[in-house]
Amino acid sequence: MKTFKRQESNEIACGIDFGTSNTTVAIAQGNDDPITLVPVEDEHLTIPSTIFFPTESPTVVFGRKAITAHIAREDGRFMRSFKRVLGTSLMKEGTYISGRKTNFENIIGHFIEDIKRKAELSADREINNVVAGRPVHFVDGNDKADKEAEAQLDAIFAAAGFKNIRFQYEPIAAAFAHELTMGDTERLAVVMDIGGGTSDFTVMRLSERYIKKHDRQEDILSNAGIRMGGNDFDRALSMKCFMPLLGLGSLWGCKGLGFPITPFFDLSELSKIQSMYTQKYKRDLRQLIGQSNDKVLTNRLLSIVEEEQGHALMSIVEEAKIRLSACEQTSADLSFIETDLQVRLDRAKFEDSLHGCIESIQKTINACIVMAGIKTDEVALVILTGGGTAIPLIQQITHRTFPHAEISDGNRLSSVGFGLACDARRYYLGAN
Image (cartoon, rainbow, N blue to C red; front, side):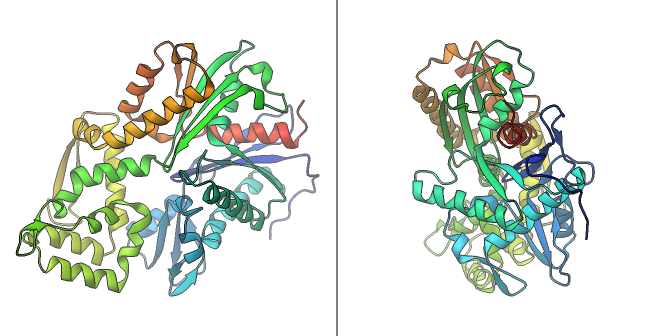
């Protein structure tokens, strides 16, 4: 067992950005020492929020290694986007891993314990103090579920060994990270944090001279958020461009009805894929496909479910989404389903698939501005964080909504974790 240097609780703290898609951790070891991001998987400063439970081994695997194990068809249970379970009924229901019912507190706990261990190895000391990021809303329109989600995450961090736990809204943390290089001039800023599971927005007054203020509430003008993010963009792209190759939109039954949409939606929603692998689901799907009028297409759907390749498919969808943020056209190789099967994609179709998502995000931005009591022309700075802000359509909305603002998007994946450590230093280490 690793023995750490003896330290007092006021000597070190960390910030953990436990994300739906990726996770980061940063360490603060003193008021004058630089905050450092921790390599959480080999040399990488981010780790995919994924986990793999091998059937024949007690050693749980995380991040890119978990993805590799799943793609290699190793025997075991692969999970991702488990942050979205917080505050939902699934937290109580649990799931089955190697035939045993397991609650999600333990599943998420394995991941948080691994992050804490890596932070302590990097610092060579025990870490008791943490500021953890949270979305503005874990669950939309349900204050009770939202409070339950934070309480569940608090219990998970405590079980992982943290003694002192605080939460901070993720977009506010991103603002704290940006303040370090702002200078003394006050600027009215909007933070847009579009991650894997949520889109969160904050209007805040920022200045480097505010960094050591213990209470920042007077600087925060408004917060707003919606449970929509990169995973929803993936689902939209999948339903628009991938699922028709598997039978979405084809006819079903003697009356020529449309093939039921449920299995296509389930296959495009990361939190539902694993539920498709039960014997009952597979049996029901075979019966459904028995009445399909285009079995060439729907047998592809059946093959993916029976071979339990849903996560592999959605990884390809996600990669296509990322490529379409950089170029106008791309293609996706689906030969793992059928020899020479490919889908050609263009940005226009992708953007068309996002219509509903973008509309909801725009409404949430507008609500945040109204709550702040400001006009969009007054905003001097927009800070973009989270992978979803790389999508050109999101950037177009940003420029259109805030025409006079400087746009900062240099640290999309690390700014929240870094800012959480800034907040941890201010709160735990006595910065004043």
